[in-house]
Image (cartoon, rainbow, N blue to C red):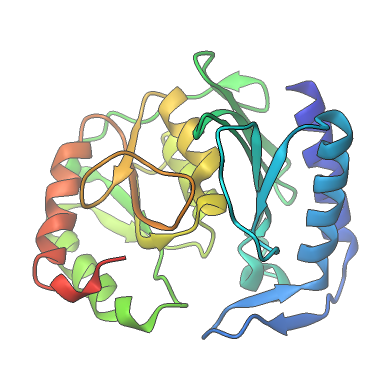
Length: 261
């Protein structure tokens, strides 16, 4: 894990070195990539290939996304790209290692706050070397993070309806623009749950392991386990509210049967 820590910190320095990165559209509404995303991803893949010559890669800024049973690194070079080029200081770098299609170790790094989150299957989760745990907050006092899935117009109404359904049952909602940031907040216990109706594996791979090792739960909102080879309706929460939260999310989805991922 020390090597992963060092690699993520180096990538974070590279990310912050770009003062005004070039921004390109990826072809969908509000879906952007910067030259820094591409450079950081290239750096991470090159370094990991040297350390793990037989490993495979599934990374956001590439065209081929195939997951096998081999050791595979699932990488988000900059999660929260719009935050990044708008200088909102809320973006993270994420690396999850998956073997037999299940995460085995991973790390997420926030170069703005210098917070390093690390997790290894069966060995717990840490932030800057200190063990972290999810909260035990009941649902009526819960803060729930969410992603608005801005790239997918077909999910706009469902997302809005879900928030409206949730608000009378919880304390409040939060949205940062970085799924990785919000999953770390759940693992650390300063938020109590998170959902997004369509997330990509690089958005949630390392964060899912972090939450599970911190005592929380993650799943597909519609039922079933988290998968790492395709996008999914992802949710996470502390163990106390997980089932209740999933019921509320599913109730909003029942009104929109055509929104299936």
